[in-house]
Length: 281
Image (cartoon, rainbow, N blue to C red; front, side, top):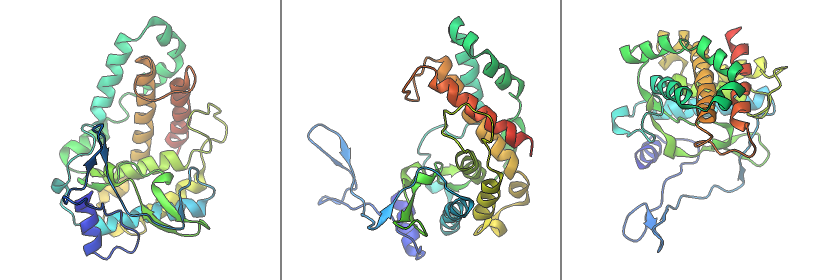
């Protein structure tokens, strides 16, 4: 986080920078008497976060904000950044984890999720080419945010402009197409993540707006392989999220918090419906 903040400051990044504030011992983390870590970061006044995209203009603005962030961090050597979450972008491991969960799941859960398991198994090879592109280096390793959801942007109180990209702790080296895919996944979904209605789940105008915003500052920096695989990346990211929700359901809901039984299964269904729309593009 400090490396990123320092770089943004040196580059005269035009938006707010969450530069951590050191304590009296010049450390960025302080521990309370119970051993819990705390960190102090600047407060950005007259700002707010949003949880749901309202229109295509807002989607464009959000994606453009991340695009600008990538442009200003483009020349950071990815080797200088440690992965914030080990194996987070290991798509093969997600598949392996799913297959192990399926093997160990209770008969009852396998039966309840039979339709979703069938769909996931039918498309199990969808990420294969993406994995190959990563292994071959055809998709370069870049600095990515890794959690480019709408709520990780600070808007002004009138929601007309963006003030800062936040939650920099998730930043890691990886393919920038992951961030694009996750923006498509989270921005184009017309419903909440556990809504199981397939009708009108996908918003094509927001898809176009996100794509335009994402490319706004970095189109000329991307390789032809990256540009050619934008939609495919979105498909892989959505498939992988469906896979993760189903894996957790089969594992008896040990990772994602749930508010009611079968919520992770409903999340899986939601992502499958979204993926079906993306596969039709």
